[in-house]
Amino acid sequence: MMSWLKRLFSGPQVAGPARLIKRFDGSQATISSDVMVSDTDGWHIDSSEAMTVQLFEIDPGDIDNGMLCYRASIKSEQIRTQGYLEMWCRFPGLGEFFSKGLNNPIKGDNDWASYEIPFYLKKEQNPDLLRLNLTLEGAGKVWLKDIEISFTPFK
Image (cartoon, rainbow, N blue to C red; front, side, top):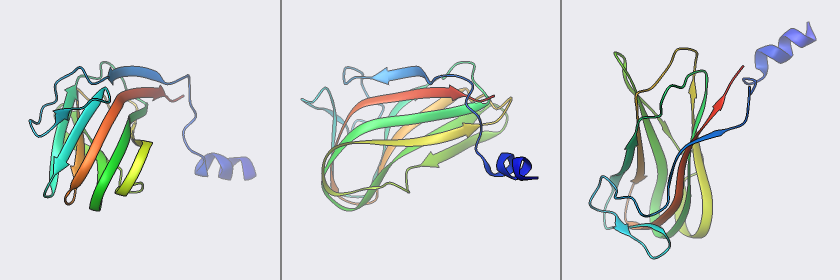
């Protein structure tokens, strides 16, 4: 009985190490023109209002049954409300679904820190497009670098 309960409440079992799908190092142009290349090998956003910044779109390849992870190093200044990473996954014939980093928002003045959000895929859930965004709910400055998408397969 106890082993059944443990399996019921445990998370998915990892089948192998995380695999890097794509890394952005500051040399790539972003979709939104509101983003400026920064001297930190990354990007800089200086916003006077709430906005969602479209950073990148990628085809993740043939993946399912695992966890996507959108990760970035972020530095902030004068974030009055909050900001967060946002990832949209498009599934053919089904539409788009999202994951937002609301559980670890960017607020105030902060030195470089790592932020990440997951998106869990079941068997045969294979997205054909990932949209990587940063949302600011108000004014502030944000620097981003070392943006990456990785995939960890499940058993």
